[in-house]
Amino acid sequence: MSAAWLEQRSVYYLVSSVAVALMLSASWQWLPGAPSQPARMRLFMHDVLTGPGATAVVVVNGTGPVVLGGEPPLRFGQVVMIDDSLTEGASPASRPLGRAQGFYAFASMHGPALLLCMNVVLTAGPYSGSTFTVFGRDNIVEPLRELSVVGGTGRFRMATGYVLWRTSSWEVHNNAVLELDVFIYIPAHA
Image 1 (tube, rainbow, N blue to C red):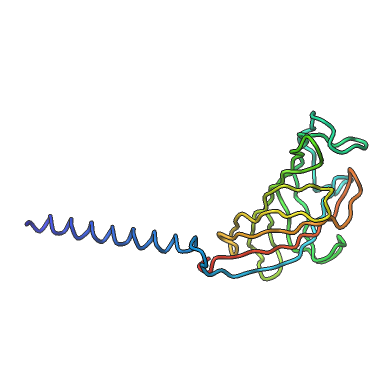
Image 2: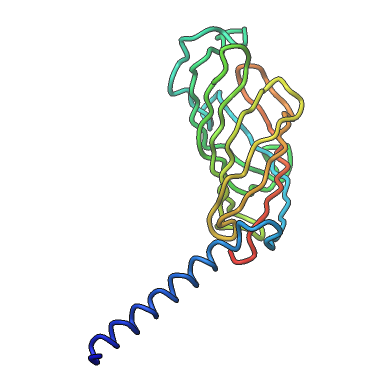
């Protein structure tokens, strides 16, 4: 056996051992009962569609069936981009905590149910600088809805969880204040 062959073999074993160790350390979080740290917060989202301070803008007018009457009617296919303020309380003057940035689309032909995708960007409090992503179905006429937390960045890297979503106030076809009761589970290694 040559020294070069032994050196190649040693490098092979070293690389294989490191690869197995990395796979095991990366996959432990998916095991049932893997440790996680719970986080809970309550946020109020201000979805403003009117006036000079609008934070929600219709980017695609729906051309499908009317899902909620009124003037103008809300139609299947309508898409709204958002950069909504998140505050500590229901009043827009309460302490700002961050922004909700993303979009919602009227995704049901048979009622006012939205497909919602947004990043919650926190700018104050213990999680300032971190984000988490909310995704799911929001039937806006139901008193309580549940959406998924599907990941995040910073302190919320690899997070999972859910948001209990309530309408605090709503001027139909105009502005809404939504209460978000957030339950996030953060892997211990994140």
